[in-house]
Length: 71
Image (cartoon, rainbow, N blue to C red; front, side):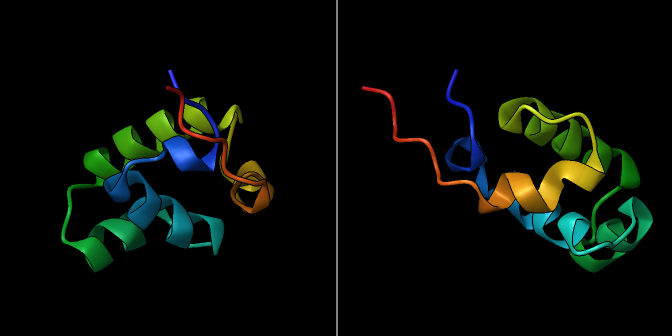
């Protein structure tokens, strides 16, 4: 499995960016017209790919260089 910010799907990236900026799951769900549970699921997947445990670590994790695609 690819890891790092380059491994995030477009949907995960759309969700983690406002989360890193301090938006709540409910706010993100409203902005993107998604269920709150969908936001939670994408964040959990993104945390795993980024190797972090929670929202507080998102800004730093997103600033790390993207990992190259595995061939």
